[in-house]
Length: 274
Image 1: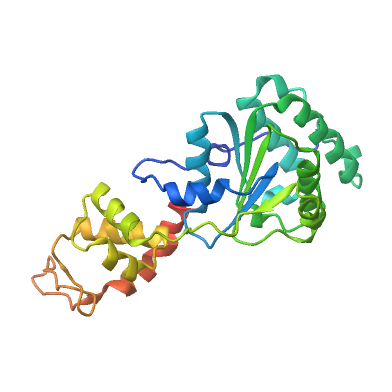
Image 2 (image 1 turned 180 degrees about the horizontal axis):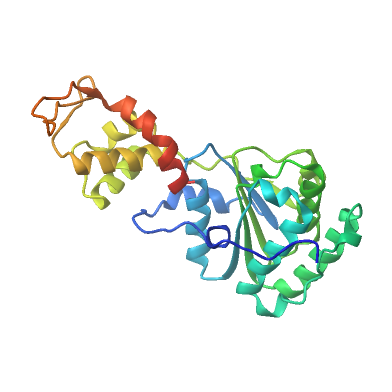
């Protein structure tokens, strides 16, 4: 076999919904396009993957979650690991074709055989490709587009990505096999910010103030609520300053701009709220 099966847990596990709130408006917009496959685009940390995970959870259907990364541009790595992920959720699909060294240079033909077999076994299943922007090689992009081309209801395919679909997907978009979820309001509105602050027991600011402070960006909002919960009452909305704190040496720190703190921490928080 050309690649080793080594699916890391995080590649085959959907984002946790612990501590999240129901976003009925965003979910309704997410479900509005009708096609076998749908593509949701959003910046890092905007909550796109969590929103797709909420949709999957609400359906109660069997699902396969696969988090793509740069290694999946190699066909041997992708098919070995994706097949393992499918096998966890769909034991009947464990007989899928295996990618071998003989398939090098004939990836397009192998993709046709592989995804035809997967569609035959899948049935009423949801398959999610998270971080789809991490696939930059045309061969693997075309392979995933072939999957979309073979898909029909009740099979449901989702792509969560920081970038819109590449050229390899243009044909399946034209054939209405792939729909773009361009009208999904990923940014949290004031009411949603208020609900999240309540759920996280952080009420130093109301929802409107949090929406202004964070722009409704999911990872920034979570980070702000965490900071406000850790330091209740220390935020001054005028100037957005955190009051000086006593250090162990007995001196006081200078006031810190909360926006600077958020900018410094949002990259880390984005990994927790894709």
